[in-house]
Amino acid sequence: MQQRAVETRGRILEAAVREFSDKGFHGARVDVIATAAGVNKQRIYAYFANKETLFSEVIRHIFTLIGDEEALFLDLGDDDAPHMSEILLRHYMFFHARVPEFWRLLAWENLESGRHAHVLKDVRETAFAHLRRIYHAGQRTGIFHERVSFATYLFVLSAIAFFYYANQRTLSQTLNRDLADPAVREQVIRECLSLLATHDHLASTEAMHQGVSR
Amino acid sequence: MQQRAVETRGRILEAAVREFSDKGFHGARVDVIATAAGVNKQRIYAYFANKETLFSEVIRHIFTLIGDEEALFLDLGDDDAPHMSEILLRHYMFFHARVPEFWRLLAWENLESGRHAHVLKDVRETAFAHLRRIYHAGQRTGIFHERVSFATYLFVLSAIAFFYYANQRTLSQTLNRDLADPAVREQVIRECLSLLATHDHLASTEAMHQGVSR
DNA sequence: AATAAAACCAACCAGTTAGTTAGTTTCGTG
DNA sequence: CACGAAACTAACTAACTGGTTGGTTTTATT
Image (cartoon, rainbow over all chains, first blue to last red; front, side, top):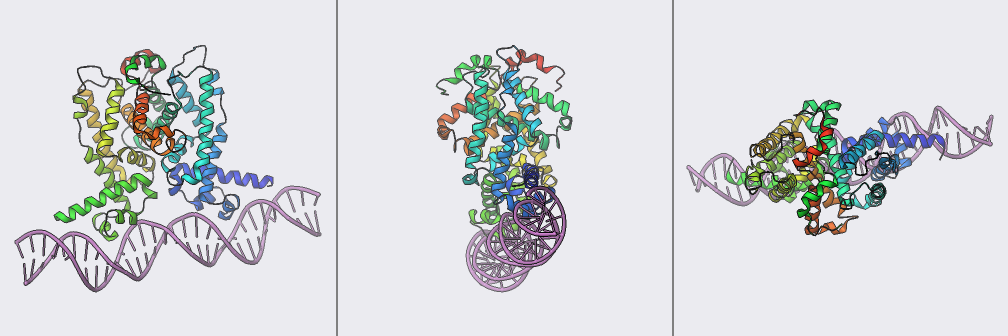
């Protein structure tokens, strides 16, 4: 594959990221992606077998853009027990900064995965493997309390994803107009994240944890 | 509208709830809904103007099924500062018990609302008015700390929604097979919810809240 | 200049799907 | 029983949409 081809493929991928993140798999249109990429539709099928494959590659793509970011955990200051909320806010902003469509795509993928599970299985495993590496990096640096399981970690990430688009798409458009202001939104994110307890809080809810295995 | 018609409309609505919650707006098929309802497709268009209207009515429907459940807050025991997690677990289970498709539908609605916002605007306002009433009921009973804004409340509800289908659809199918077990899942839910701090934790993250308005 | 990959153009195919139409049958109620 | 609402059957349309084909032009490389 020549240089120009690589670039074209890349443009298609970028356009696909936008379209899929906007409308999800079923809502997205191949022709729209082609036009947005400034490319003939035919080119899409030259580089991707079909729509599903394209979607798979989009998911795979955004994860390669993220990378194994151990850096996420490395410069958290000298505090040896940083707040969970601080870590998560960092996650949110970090991922968002690299791929603005990241959280929303993740949300679609989660909801729609049931439909084309056969195709996306390996992609999801790749994605999870990725997140698992990041998670373990966090564990190694001693940031995650042992009680914070991987499932829990995924949960809060998902929650952030949900929060992100909920605010972007729903709240800001209808009720909470003020949330349209990025500054205010970040404050609310902080407010919400502060609700996610740091591990020192877990002690006080010990009673709820009877028998919880990790 | 006669009795039989009301029943038919109801059956269509129920089938639509299942189909839409399963595949979302774009993924859902009108014919499938008709068949599932044991009804001719024609009947659907006799009672609902089009697919979008049907979806709107579905969302409206599930909220009427929930009702203004002040009961959610009433018998929380003598503890005058119950754990946020306890309240939310209650919410989750309560809504889920009434309409198993509730959380998933809410998630779809959130993601897809951008597309047909014009149609769903009033529905969403109805829905939020509903949740707002429930929220205020919680406030009146003194359960929510004053710092827990409505936006925050929505966030944690959304988070639960996300968690719900994330586990149902993704985690349980791929990595965390054990989560397929409802008992285990409930434990994890508890684990996750316990991460959502009770208000007594907020004091320790006071520093993060500078200038946060409610 | 020659060559081959890359990209374009534009029409086309085939399956799907929201939505419609027309005529017939069933059902409940006065 | 009579009447009208409710429901069915079944075909149809019109638009959409994923995917294809064949022939032409552009671009980079040797």
